[in-house]
Length: 243
Image (tube, rainbow, N blue to C red):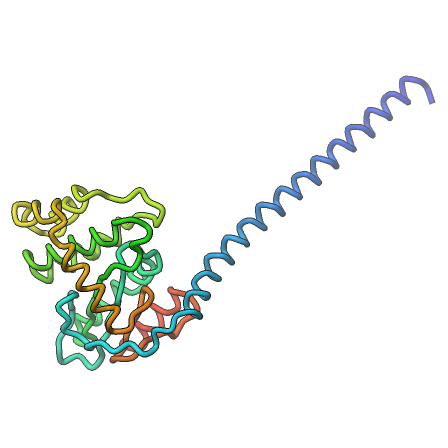
């Protein structure tokens, strides 16, 4: 073999080795990315399952509907009642809301279920947003009535911040209240001044007295409803039960 051919052969082998190394590195990167995604999915689902397995709120004693610490949709004559204890910062509550809101609203309008949403403060260790949003809800409920309060409730979830923040300030909560239909002059000073904080404290105490220890806690016809391995499954099964 000539020197030129030997040099060409070495170059070809070197290029092939480089290509093989690149393929192996690409494969390792793909496996690593896939592993990270899998770990995250397991953590999210596993975290929910751990929370559910540690949740001892199976003996909640609370009025089926009609609490002064919530907003109700649907007729009193409905064959089913649903109560949802929630924290406006809780991501699981946000997921349950997204899964069930439209269906529960439809079923309430059809007279099949009466639903009461009871916000309280569970995640105070993450900051003051849970208390401020619950307090703002109480202001809207008191000054603007249940229809506007329910719209404000829905907007709070549509604009739900992450648990790590940043959190909307009171001016942002005021804008959502006005968007829901509240008169700015009727709610501005109360929301900006945290006038609803006492209501939030009482609502939280009422939830604690009822035995609620986690969010979302769902009661169907007076009994804690936990039929679901995930929040989405829980919500879907709830809708099926009352539909």
